[in-house]
Amino acid sequence: MSSAPISHMIGTMALLLTSLFVVTSFVLLGTMTQMDLVKPQLREVAEYVASNIVDLVTLADQTDVANLILVKKLIIPASVGERGYRIELSDGSVIVYLGTLQTVRAETPINLNTSSEVIINGEIVGVNGLNELVEVKGTLFSGSGYPLVWCVKEDGTIYVGLGVLKSSTL
View 1: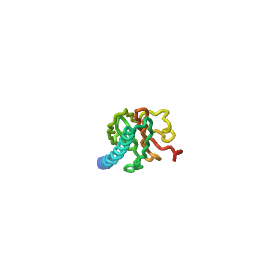
View 2: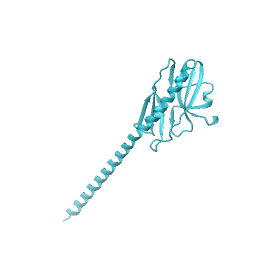
View 3: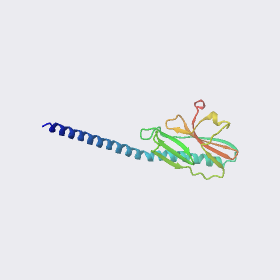
View 4: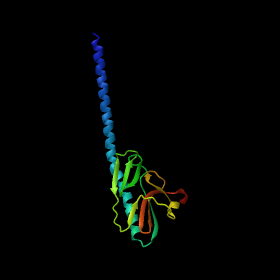
């Protein structure tokens, strides 16, 4: 007679575990679907940044001035899918990551067609004027004050990177 309560307990535990599994599966499926919907928006940001870099490098390459500083403000959304994102330049491409997730990202190549040597995200030391205007960043986070792309032409070499306009120049 004591087997009836044990069988009810086993049945109740199986029902609870099955419910937990189903709820977890739906939550994971919903999260993955949301991440897939965000990727096109990340790609748009990456393409926009890459396009601005190409514009600045082309302009710097076409000018006859030996030393030149160009800065272009980026008009980017503060968030994508109600989450922050970060922008990085790496090996001739723009990569946009969703928050701290390395797996949710969009990458766009920077298609440069110049005769000059171009160094992307290179270290700029001692360029007159750039350090007074721009706080150079290796990674640009969404929601930054005045995000921008900078381009420096110095003795035939073009340097490109990301940054934020310094508050003292406002």
